[in-house]
Length: 136
Image (cartoon, rainbow, N blue to C red; front, side, top):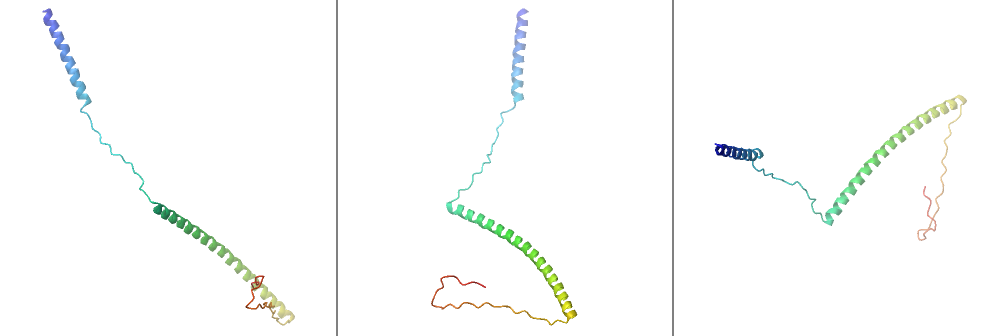
């Protein structure tokens, strides 16, 4: 009976080992395959002409932005100048009315100031002057 017990114990150990091996392979599952799709983008090849055109487009875009900002600044400056000229015009109108009132009070005739004109220098057409002509 001792041999049967030893044999039975050895068989139980073998069955336990086989069961342990079988469960270990079933818990791991079947080998998994992963599909990897790389998302690497390479820049397109550009010729020198394409680079030059891109640089020209960027330059023109910067120039257009600069021109737009400059025109906006000029517009705001012109609005300020117009306001200033309107205030000067209003003040001149008031002065004109005051002067007219003073002239009526003292019965003074209105005098028209004459503008003095400077004579323009005459230069012969066949000679070139050494100095540039003044601009009026």
